[in-house]
Length: 384
Image 1: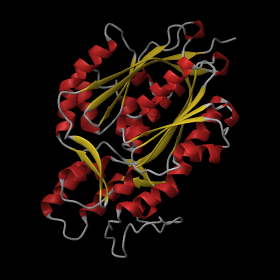
Image 2 (image 1 turned 90 degrees about the vertical axis):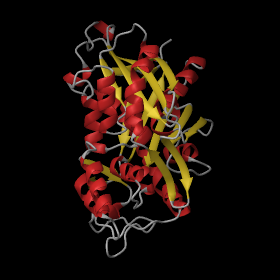
Image 3 (image 1 turned 120 degrees about the horizontal axis):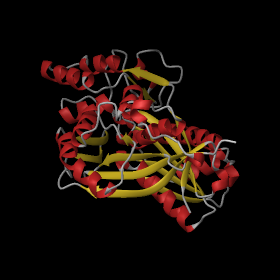
Image 4 (image 1 turned 45 degrees about the horizontal axis):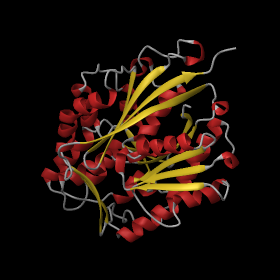
């Protein structure tokens, strides 16, 4: 019995931010020193990001058609700092529709009706409430009231892979299960002005978005292409517990993302991947783009060609770091066959029924510092 990702759907808020605009907005804040302005310029310009999406329409610099429910900017362009409670209230208002949009896209892509879903796994680390997003999906999508629900909270950027792993474990125990895995993050709710280099880096890379996957072991549900979930791995690095963290502060969630993170990943990645893959060879890499420097360190640490992480760099460029949802955006490109020849390797679906397939190693990094891994194979239905 093989468990597969049947489809992946994505959703982003309508407000699209140009990276240069956000950079200039932060650099122009009252009281910002020249040193801080230089740090802001360096962080934003080195991010590898052109555009990001946000639920805070005011950050676009245009009069918002749908204003946020919290004060974001005053009349002078000064970035305000609402309380954590106010920010979380906005999460409660804006996250559920994003969860639902991504989930609906995934269900439609798989040709699966809401009534066929047996389990829901939701993932988020940028807000919290109860009944939570798993409950709201039942109501918003018309899922069966008997659907089993699970929520992974505060696992950070790596959480989508444990979400898929949870789905695979469910399907291993129940071959008839149809599992909906949905990640949604509203990272920009926690933006604030700071001269702390770690907060500046956070403001330069994080974005809002959602992604969902339909997972099942039922072969009759497969479409033209699918991703087989072969196995998963987890590795905790020797250090990094203080370098990547996500805590609740009085004025939003405090993201710690130190300059040591890329260096730790660069130092540890070869050993973590070697333990996970063993002698197996892969054709393509789907790596969570925590930032451009993280991708650079992975590329160097694994001796990959410059083209190997093209799909990851493309998602970073167009969407930024959407925390847990990001790796599913990258896997969607491989599933849909839009990742590009360079990123996808050369193996492809060469045999009838996709017997050879394209083997993809997925890597994501979370607090701890933790490396989550998955090995997937892209298959294609046999042509008539």
